[in-house]
Image 1 (tube, rainbow, N blue to C red):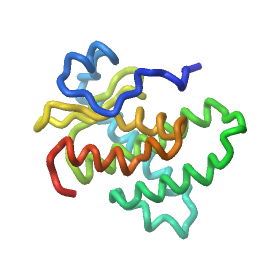
Image 2: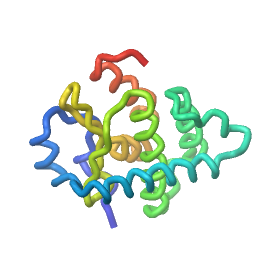
Image 3: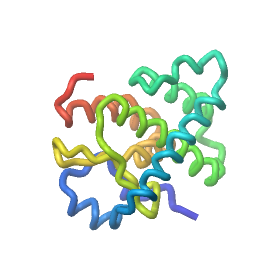
Length: 165
């Protein structure tokens, strides 16, 4: 079982060397990468399909949809006194990390860089030779609360990239 209090969860890394040292090699096989991309899209669509119908319109891969995810997380984890099933945490990290990653790619570009330990998969931006880690940010958000908000991560990324949303 994974230790969810890992210190190795990061938002951004500039340059490839540190990323490779910390998290290992990328999956290079094009067919495997394409399959993983399709899987992430399917996971993200399942997230949307499980959401209350009154909120589905808010899930359009826009930056505003990240606020709706924040509300879902807050409503689902109102009490920090309760022990949360580690399998539920892992599922949420994969589900919400997929949605966050696709939101970033749809709006800001970048390309997935998958790793065998999927939680360390990242989005690479060649224009700034940097990568971001959406699964790490979701893990930190679930563990630490609103101080690690998903919209803040997204807007920080806009600043790193020097683009306007």
